[in-house]
Length: 414
Image (cartoon, rainbow, N blue to C red; front, side, top):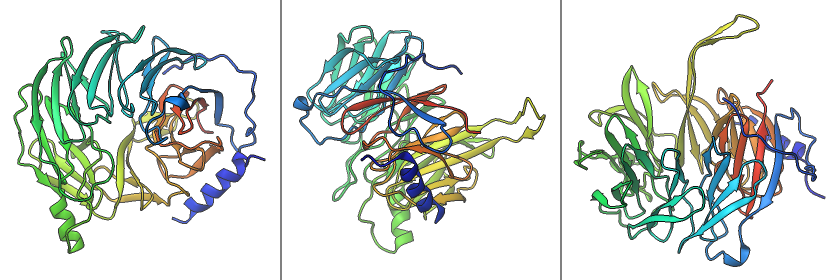
């Protein structure tokens, strides 16, 4: 008999104790069997198998993240069977599938004004396809896997590949505008690579040798002397670290009112840098093993019923594979809270209904508080996840490692 969500939630909670609108969805006949969870804030609306097992040619992990077309009520998601799928959000029906020559493990970027979807593939290419029918508009070959979300700005699209090459491409023609190659690190690396952050005309990116830098978005000119986080790790550890990688996509934050970026080295912890100069703002070397960073923000507001006023709140969430889930103060880098990992680990949180939704590789899906990391609700889905969910309003979507596409409804926690 399948383990109930209550037992899965209890196991996770015990482990942790130690340390604007929505899609419309029709109901499905098959009611989930794990309805007995404590708060009922998370419900499975439907699940649908979409990945063709016969076409899987790589490891059976789904590492990307869905992209959403809010107005069109569509979800775009890549898979290990070398395909990008367009699904109807209401019921998960497959509208079309586009096949590449490698696993599609990047989050797609949807452009409403162009009616197009941009995404990368492990075959080394960046693709642009028409959102209505999946017709290929252009393909740009970069000669190394593209596993992070491409970023759109103006008439350009920017991306980085696993060979530490940053590329700017014309969105209309697919022609290269500029590129910068950074010599990859020698020796051991953690699987994956960082994506790009666009802010104030600058592109921020981190590389496998442990360095972080900024480029001019229009010209590709390097604007900083690269900051070497591997040197910081060596100084902290007293020896050269085994892994040099900075695989986390930089995150934009404001520190003392000044634009800044936060990055994380697998060995050196989490570091905040000035967006203008690359100068050090703060560092927390204790947050080892970070694979993703996310900033949660809640503006100052007043409760409509009670009149109680709440101040602005910000928490930087560091998702690690070794030291747990951390909540950090983005102004100082100081620890606000920390929760140990459940068995098998967790993926990057997504913020929804005032809380954060976390998928896990073995323990199901959990709703947690970004203020203290407390578990609010959880369901045992009987499938594992290697990708974070995508969310809008009260709806969330995620593809499991077994090829099941799940739609969730998440109510605001009471």
